[in-house]
Length: 461
Image (cartoon, rainbow, N blue to C red; front, top):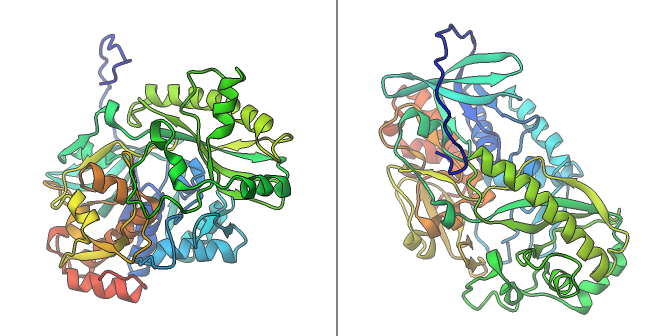
């Protein structure tokens, strides 16, 4: 229950019939990196797939939040799963919707352009798209999820499926179906972000300013989300970090002193004068499963962003004529609810190059969160097991993305968008394989899943 919400009584909804408007083999709910990858992987495995999304575009954090750095951790020695997550970058670059990322050997995706990229991928794969529908409740037969109820401008509708992939980010389906889940205490949650993009920046002057005062990961020792522990090898590496303008603005009284947490990274400086993926506003005390918190965060985040822009205009080379281009469509949420999976990832797994017989992909030793930053510059990586997307006690359901099972530090690794894509691709293939073999999800032949992963270009060992 929200700490802000007072219950004033109850009402009883009358019983009603809900029209079943669609049936499918695999139903994926949520189209962020995990959900989009799951839907594509299942479709490419030869089953009928439907993809449900509450917003008007696919892509999740990439498109609706504006998190354009899919693989900003990548360096020469980084070892990855590749697969659909890498395909997002390659396809976006080919379609003119990506530019080289400023601090790594990766592409920065254009949040707006990726909407078109995602559309093309969905259409080409033959996926049935269902935008503008919000998940309301699971449809259950015993302990099995056999579909969902959605709410939209069309009212309530029922969608039935043989297998369901929960890629909501918050384990919404799993939780409401009765699977054991746990919600990070609000005071321990990673901060939410308000992403925004600027126009009107003088690229030459801005980049000259960056060259004159280059920032490194050592400079992240700021405040709030930017107090970090590294292994030391990261400290001297370049980072597109901005903190000094906001400290100066506070010292000069330009912005309120209580906004000391403003600070963070910029993404790409475009020839057009657009400075994108401004990850500067970090909001603590926001529970992404609480609509009252989300409301407060949206309003407060935009307020802080305008203060940040004013500081950039005053104190950052090339930004005197900067103006707001756009905000993300919604807050960026890093941390809410996770399932109790058949296997929950641990800090030892992500720090210690864990290996699993039922691996569905690998991920580099990249940890970003809870005050820890480790960049994968040495070739180290861990495997993620199929059991990590398999919830306890519920049939016909897989949970992919940042709500898969794990502890605090493992979440700081697996929550990242590229790892969500790895988990999603594995879950999509497993869902399809269970249908091909006519078996339950907990009886899937993982060796068959691994063969299909290889066929789809995924490294899992």
